[in-house]
Image: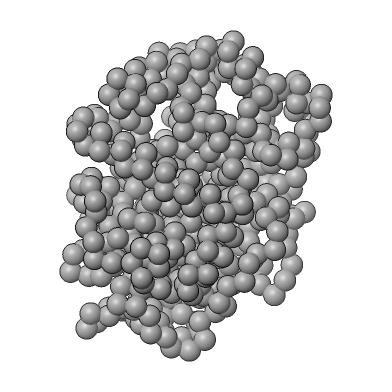
Length: 474
């Protein structure tokens, strides 16, 4: 399992399964150890939880998933609505997306840029969405002010990986400034490499004023401590293996007993199994993302790479790279990975990420990689998240589909889902609140069949080849 195997944690939990695939397996396991990420390796001892469900329980509200979204929802339910939720987690707390991401909090949600919001929904809706995203950043800042998670503020640098994309960046900057009054700046290649970072691919960049790097493990553990201090119960090693709804109640079967709930919020992200609930089947396309973290850079390497910023960085590839200098002097970089879970442990994906690191920073050729991991990203079929109640006749809610931009927006999504669970309407009308997660093609009956998953992946393979071609051509 690549270099990550050096950091496997040993305790009473079962072994981590590096090949888990949400389109294939019925549940993400039970009581599995954390993936051996940098965040887990450096976050300290995980805080206590409430252990597995042991016997049948009654709960007012159950949240499935104890990552950023689920715990934020539980926190806001307790603080703002006086509801003490019960959280069910299949493995360890924040076992999935929340401890496998890049730790980049950007002023975004989903995969679409602001100009694409206008193209899809028109100017008025796009403006409302922008205000929601900016409010979300303030929600996130408020939460992390209570948690020691090594924040690295300063903004986000969106780096052009080749000269031909600079015109596109310039147009996006004009839209951000003129329509949204979002004060971004265009930087030329010389400025980027001299004043920010010596990325040798950089042909320029767009600088956004909002962006914060965080330590994902410390943030997850902080959310857990905060939720439990508010009376939230967090039951780990308790996967939902069956779900029945009758007489206005939900009965969630776990290995240790059934949990009865008035309402259920789903916050399972990229680890949402196909069989969890029919309202979720085929509504997400899980995508793998790889990350590596180097050993700490020497002074000479710092000078050679000219890292003068700790801001979060992404490049303009469709199969984008996200990277930054961490507080302890290491470099972290991530990008898209294998197609299937069974392919994920192959060494070639780490090797590809290493080569991409060296393309940007030749001085790091041959540097030791201390951590290497991968994880699933929840991508909706229209590239935007959904937070709401998919069926007004059922007390089921979800917050899903961030497309890799969930570190920041998950806090707001948890808050919005808490409002819905508590019976309050969304404070603003937006498509991400008012419509369910879409199918890949609602006219195709085959999507209801589990046999459809391989066909989606065939399409994904072709898309990845096309994206690579367009990303790398001049």
